[in-house]
Length: 303
Image (cartoon, rainbow, N blue to C red; front, side, top):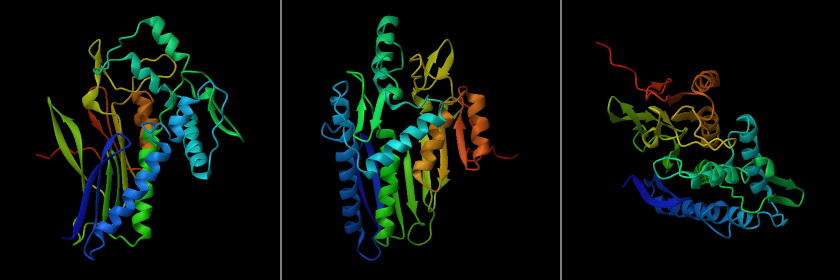
């Protein structure tokens, strides 16, 4: 077989790894990827109680600072930069706000309960010193899985390239990277679900030696007063952000694509589209009327 493939779960999402097996090294490459993925999960996943994030949440409000190594410090630098560039709307401590909503995105908490939860939200309450990091308020939570996933995808790509892989696909939920083309020269094609009338269509994007990240899911939008809202919640008032429902970016690295998609999705629709146009990167976006925008969106057929 020209390709070796494995499917697994990582950071609470489905993951698919496909690597070149023309030289019979496919299984070895997959094993190296699994080893790196396990390392990152044990270190950073919010689902692992003994990970840095699990222990950080457990120590919230205790005054105990957790030491950061170089890799961990770099991750927190990235998160802080996203927080700053999004005018503080990207806030991984807002994960606790999800408890205020049901599975369909409807508010189930009272106004008093929501205000109480909001007191536990805010990156400004993440203390960072030479001793490490600490969440200052008891009951706070932080979840960096959405940032670690693209970092993990980039890390797996580095593992493969350093081990002379020439053809590979790494797909973790909506974070994707490739190495070269498929063996034999075929393109790597990635399916993206997009609205089309009253149904859903699949558009296929060419992704050779590049990365792609999408944030937001138009299919999980909630409707309030006949308006569509995504599941992104404002750390200021706990309400859904009236921005783009989905944003996808193609870039050299998955982290770059992820950061751009995150920021665009948290802006108002008009500001988000204008910002995307200024990036110089291929993108697509789905607005609150379920209309597609951007150079990666399907182009209408000519008569």
